[in-house]
Length: 174
Image (cartoon, rainbow, N blue to C red; front, side, top):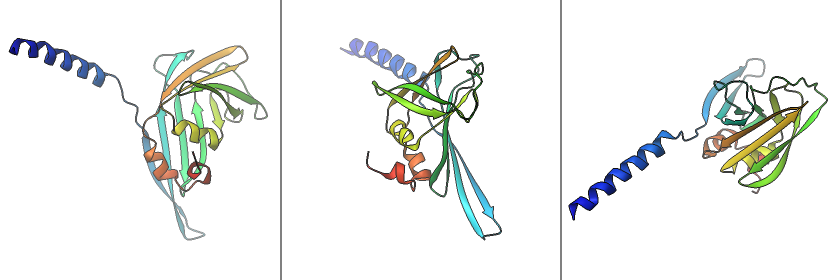
């Protein structure tokens, strides 16, 4: 009877080793204290970053797409995708790009303005809330015949809500 358990334990060890070999996504977080000496106030600022992966496009394997969220005094200041592998396009600040997305398997769009340059796509806090409550987001961008598709496996949003939880859009109903 003991010999049946040995293969089971070996198989379990292999499965757990391969599961731990896959990276679990985590928020990288930085906290800053900004002092406003003229108004005698101290502002707490958080910057959260989440690495994704390129599914299509991307300049090199060393570059990774990043979802960045910056908050000050509990409110979102800016949120954007940095798709560093998408440098071939040149945008001006008055152009809008409709990013195609699949969030937890459901097709949707994310409206982005062109103010970030060719590889940075700012988007709304409503779309940010949708992404934070998701498990997986696949984002596609196309501009001037260049295309890139990225994937973000979304970790627990609790750290972001703790740093940005005073934002009325993020606080609202799901």
